[in-house]
Amino acid sequence: MLLERGQWTEYGGVAQGQEIETDGGILARREKHGSKLCELELKAIARGATRTELFSNSPMWWMTKNRNPSGSSDGSENIQSTSLEQHAVYMATVAKAFKDKWGVAFETVEPFNEPSANWWKADGTQEGCHIDVATQAKIVGYLDSHLTSLGLATMISASDESYYDQAVTTLKNIGSTALAKIDRINVHGYQYASGDRASVRSLATQAGKALWNSEYGDGVASGADMAKYLFQDMRSLKPTAWVYWQVLDAGGWGLIDADNDAKTLGSATQKYFVLAQFARHLRPGMRILDGGRDNVVAAYDASKSKLVIVAVNFDAAQYINFDLSGFSTRPVEGAAVTRWSTQIGSGEQYGQHADTKVSGTKFWSYFAQNVVQTFEVTGVKL
Image (cartoon, rainbow, N blue to C red; front, side, top):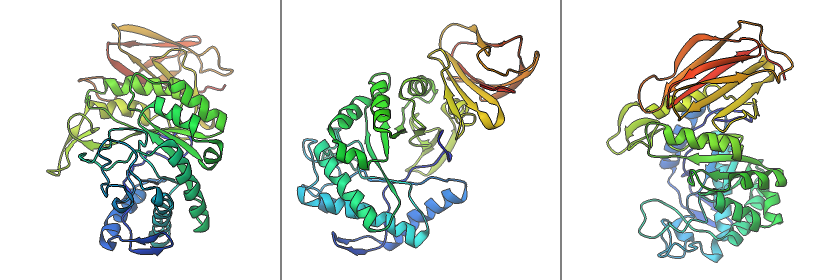
C-alpha cells in the first residue's frame, strides 16, 4: 500500500547477475540465474509494478567471517571488516547490471535486512547477517560513493530493522554523516503490538526522511492480527508505504494459501480480503487524516474530492457514527456512501453495499463484531 506514489509491488531477493569484474573483486554470478530472476522482475513490471527495490539478506558467503551467509555461531556480527566496501561494490554493481542489461532501475538499494537481530546464526535456514550499527554507517558511506561512481540515481534505504525499538536505536546511533546519505528509512513490523512506533516516526520526521513499513507478516489467516497492527501503524508510525511480505505462502502467512515447495496454489485467505479493504481504497497520493479513533483511518483524495474511511470493530456489535462537519464542503442530504465489508475470520469477503446515506453532517453504519468496513464519500472538500 503506497501513499506517496506508485502502487503495490512484490519484493524480490538480491539479484543474481552476470559475472562482473570490479575493483572490489570478481562477483561470480551465473548468467542464467540472473536472467531467470530478471524475467520475474520484468513480468511484474509488465503487470503494472512501478517501483522496484534491491536488498540484501546477507553479504555473499565469501565476505562473511565464517563463510556462512546464514550468520555467525552466536548471532554476532558476521561480515569481515575487510569486506565492508566489497559488499557496497557488490550491491551497486548488481544495480548497475540490472539497469544496463534489462532496463530495471531500482528505486532504492538496501544493503541490510534486520541487521540488529541476533537470531542470524550459522545453523539457520535463511540467509541473514547481524551487522553492528557502526558497521552499517561505514557500509552506507561506501555504497553512496559507489552508486555515484557508477552514475546511478538509485537512492539508499536503511536499515529494515525487525523491531520498531531496534529502528529507534539504529537511528539514534548511526550518526549524522550516514543518516544524510540514507534517503528513506525502512522498518519491519515484527514487534506487532509492542514497540515505539511514534519515536520511529518522530526521528524520521526530524531527519526529513520518507518512512516505509517495508515488511510485515503474521501466521493468522483470519486477518485479525494484521488488521490490528495495520491500524496501529497508520495511527502511530504513519508510513507512506506498508508492505505485506509474502502474498503466496502456507500456514496462515500468505494472503493466498500456497505450498511453495509442492508448487500448489490454494484459495485466498480471509486476510486477503481484509487487506483489500485498505489497499484497494487507500491509494497513492492520498492525504492521511486523523480518523479520531484508534480503529479508524481516513484518507482524502483532493483531485476527486473523495474521502475514504476504513474502520474496524473488535468489540460487541454496534453502530459507528462518522461526522463530516469539519469539512468545508460536504455531500448533500441523502447522498449515497458506498461501503465494502469483510468479516474477520470467516464470512463476508469484500462485499459491496449501497445502503448508506448522509444525514445532515453524518452517516453511520452497523458493525457486527470483528468486521472491517470501508466507505467512500464523494463531494467532500477540506
